[in-house]
Length: 379
Length: 249
Image 1 (cartoon, rainbow over the protein chains, first blue to last red):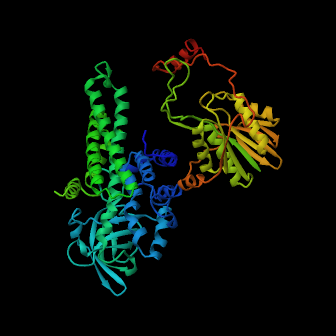
Image 2 (image 1 turned 90 degrees about the vertical axis):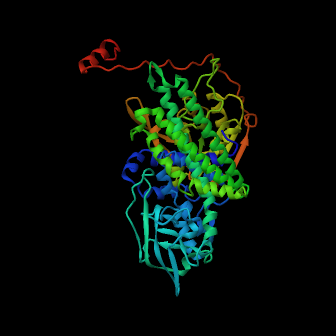
Image 3 (image 1 turned 90 degrees about the horizontal axis):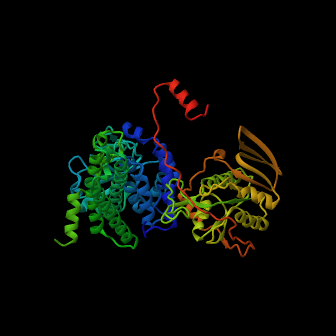
């Protein structure tokens, strides 16, 4: 029950739910174990219109300006119980907005619609082996040479990095610090660009994650996204929605763990009664439910602020941190309620517990969020 | 060819229904509602007929409170062209629903009317048949295949003991069974487009139909809880139990 959603949102939620029920849930355990999911899922998601939310209609999107449409669809996709799948399927949400907003017209027209149809995959590449949070000091260098940039350096932990077609890459085109950073759109088949193997991870198994290597990689100069050396602002403005999405992923992960725990506690018997008859379990479930509800409602409030055209940097950072903490607590307690069964891979809570950890790291760590909040508080 | 499809708003099939404490009915407070699954199949069949070029216009009609418009919008998002909402807060029973639909049929003059064989709330399985009788049309109920052939429609029906195919002259009434098709879900672009499709509202009074109830529900009870099953040691014991305890063989 929520005051934020209208009839269109409810219908979109139903569509996303059907998509997950029909195309993902029957296979998700196999895909998690295999470490990837079929590329055809992108096409199916594109056909259902699930990839185009927030992108302009002229580029094949569903139109901008309805944050809650994104919220409902993100929540339902997370119901696939696989954060990894959602991260890879949704890597365009972080890779593509700078292209749609600031790339040259002929570039955005040739790339954005194909990605929104699910024919091509878009990824964002910022983090480097030498540092992630410290964006202003990234070291991958792009040097202008005639009508090309020559790129040298490497990136790591890139979601969809293994099989993306278009990479939105942060590079250094100028001097030290944030004023020397630009965004370049680099295609998969550009000479001098290679990818490492699919990295093995603690969680998010169904997501392909890779290292990228640029060795005298020549990128046409018209692939510069926005103005030269203006990339830092673009990267930062992209983070707001990414962090909102991570907050949604966190509380939905927690919500699924809570629901599984309720179901389990109502049926599991110990000492002659179902375990929800023990006050200690009941109170634990109540604490979990309370936290999930608060995380969710606070995140909705942030979305409403964004909907109203505000730039709630502080609030979204708080929502991410709070939701992630709730997610870690709730998934931990869910495994505890399941007992030995919760340690088994066949239990959904086992996966949720592993998948929770990345949320306090990706999209800006909890510590970076706190620094951001401190700055907003003028501390 | 114009096709009329009737859809009903019911409790979502995923919801575990609860009987009200006073046994007067099923508790609908804060319960998720959805389009009756058999009606979804009816909409899907109409949309497929349109995709094949057989149907030219799909009109979808629903009877009930204002909230029914959600189900009409869903049908429009799935591919119907226009909606008619017969708004009433009263309880509408099968015969009254059939009379209301008859009034719409008189006005719209569709060649084919497709309905679900029953709705999962009261499971009466009556409205389609009653409508056919009132409108003087042929009926093909429990359809698992519908093939329009010129002025006729061949309907394969699921009946006890197998399949029966009936050839009906158009206009005709068809009610859908589960295996007729697998309904699609609406894509987001189609949901947006549906918002602009026309939806007219009318009332039972406008259509000249009295919807006063003729049947009174005395009591609604939840089904008895099932007893836990048992494990048998071997086939011999199973046969013995089926023969002597369950007495089914």
